Length: 192
Length: 96
Image: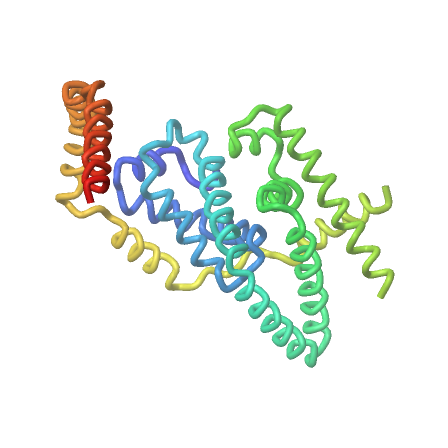
């Protein structure tokens, strides 16, 4: 926990200062998670603000300060899920932004070693983006939380509010699907 | 199995390639602006509470009125009226 239970309780009681403390403590972590979930830097802050907005108006429903973090993750997942669904409805804008990112990467590549490293990181982000783009939003979010964010099964149980067995089945299926997509990408790469 | 290992390495590389981003100075002020914009107006709260209490009563009254007004023989009256009209129309036509 990044804050004391007392801060959460004060925020639940409508204390703006305490809510600000929560935002200060968690905003970096939430923005990092949002970035990994949605894969688009330019929309990270917007989605992050949506998470804290939902937190503000749902804090009174939080049953105990101990479950604050999974609660916050659940709000993050829901906001990211809504964003991804909206993006899937407007695929054109995504394509346009991707090419813009490629232009920036190409510019950066003109620099020295740092730019080369950044380029490699950009390629990894692009590859993972392409990989996760081939599975559903649900699989994308679940796998990102488990494999990238490193959430434990116990934490994921709290986020998804399902039992361990159901979660293991979901994870197994999601892993199978992403592995299949990964194999497909590998084959494409070898063919080129 | 090789693909599985490759995928594990890719997740690890992705973790490294996506550090926690820097937060802009406007993040919190913009957030508060959004919170204020989404805040329900002072009169909306009591109105929504009143509407929530009124809704079951309104549904019950509508249902009771529906039962009271409902007339099972209504359909037959309409049908006989239509048949009579049709017969009168045919009579008129045959007279011409």
